[in-house]
Image (spheres, helix red, strand yellow):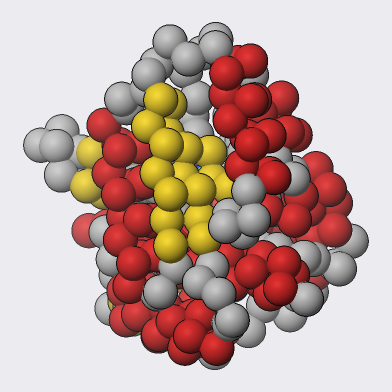
Length: 279
Ligand code: GUN
């Protein structure tokens, strides 16, 4: 039976450290949280991030904008936040309503306030191994592997999903740590053949039941990044936990796995930004 990786406990540790660091700064770090529209999942995520800020001694400034906000209005807000000295980090919650171009909005965020690590400048710095910020979810996954002393060097790593938020940066971080990395996606032929070779399998697709026990090598490490709802409305990841857990050596539960670590790593990025701004 697999060891369950306790993301909640690890996140609490990371946040405690963040709170200590925040206390050493000459002014309270600040995060601007921008939510456009009323997507219920986004509302829950954003509330969680604001709670984490409060726990860590970080000021959060919430901006709730109506779904019909124009791109010009949103860009204007981002530009004002770029100039606001109380604001160290700017988080625009994704997805944005369809009429807003996410790339345009992300590109408008000052790179030194881009605590999600979504701006091309920060993505580039991360990929060449000279990061300012680390992308929150992939960084959280790396932290979990390290905490459980799971070695990456030379291991076959398979990442399911190629999003800019998770799949691509995840592959970059695993590569930097000497993993041999394959990315699978919706056009991959015979995905199970790839997944069965994985020593470390990271799933970030967003489809409940995608990963079943027969697709997992005995003893593999399974990191489940997804947050789905099953047929009963219960939170679950991509892995069919009942069939995957008996084959894995380590597995992250959903909830209580990667999610809390993503948020904890965001707190760390806000501190990085605050230090940049105080220097
Ligand atoms: N939507 C889903 N995950 C994230 C995230 O990490 N940051 C932002 N800004 N939006 C998201």
